Image 1 (tube, protein in one colour):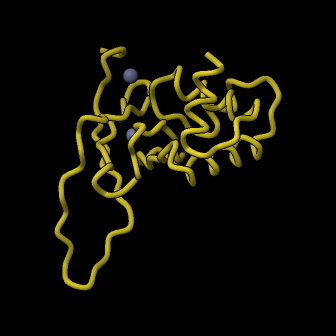
Image 2 (spheres, rainbow, N blue to C red; image 1 turned 90 degrees about the horizontal axis):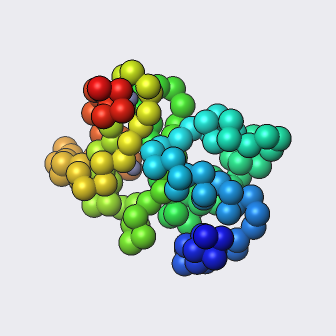
Image 3 (cartoon, protein in one colour; image 1 turned 30 degrees about the horizontal axis):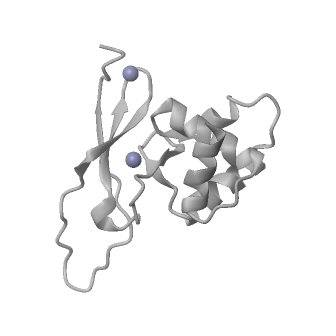
Length: 136
Ligand SMILES: [Zn+2]
Ligand SMILES: [Zn+2]
């Protein structure tokens, strides 16, 4: 398993460290977008700033993307292998109103948006809210 994680990190030019392996593993196992706080909860004793730096590195290297789902906490999830985090790579997210979990709907690209003249695109968050399968 550890070798698999190292491979994924190295594929995005990230040097595997124990911390990076652990954060990657948490994101992989949870299979949903997690906030910094939620990731911190899965460690016994790790500085929040260390986790935050790890997430920033992952994001810069396009290993993860962030979601602003309107709950007030930015959440992070693994990107697809070939993701470049360009507008064409962005997908819809689903927030469960019952458990607060945010899922990547990776098969659902966000709709194309025509911006007015002289407006430029920077970022988009498409969040659908409802009840997830676990809470049904
Ligand atoms: Zn739920
Ligand atoms: Zn996502």
